[in-house]
Length: 179
Ligand code: IMP
Ligand code: MG
Image (tube, rainbow, N blue to C red; front, side, top):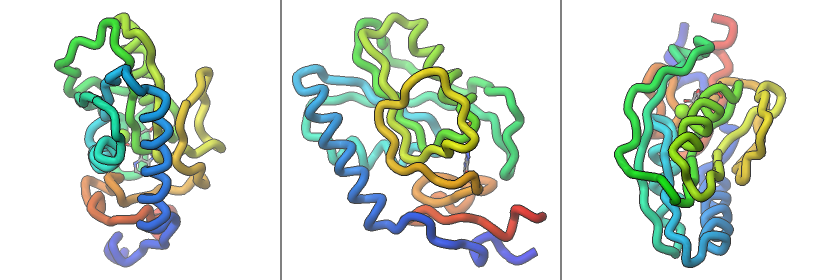
């Protein structure tokens, strides 16, 4: 098999990602004006999106991170495990969960349920990417950057076996599908 880095097809350009992140940040800033929301980034995939989103916001905001795992390679294992919890007290806070991608929806449901148990004032979700053909959700996602086809993607924080996160756009890893 060729190297994953040689099998990339651009799906969303760096410029398109950056433009959309700024749009979402402006919308969040407007909605939470005077509220000081706390962003909860889901590690590892959302760290770049979190950083860019937060820098593009022009209101007071805080950040914390939670780490879960459900994937190895390109396969979801179907169960979500907590690897690192948040340290902040989110009781009575406006929480915005920041995800890189919603695929099956299992991860975001697990984290949303967990945040709601802590008694926040509100919980909203922002995801850069959503695979609508796969995701099964019984709640709303307030901000979706891009809806994408059900292919495995990398870049802008998303990995294939921990690599390719540093690509600036989003790419399909097509040749690996038939592995
Ligand atoms: P879900 O639980 O099936 O919705 O998957 C969510 C998590 O799986 C995301 O937070 C990603 O870390 C990972 N994931 C899902 N689809 C992809 C993909 O296409 N590329 C890279 N990671 C993915
Ligand atoms: Mg993730």
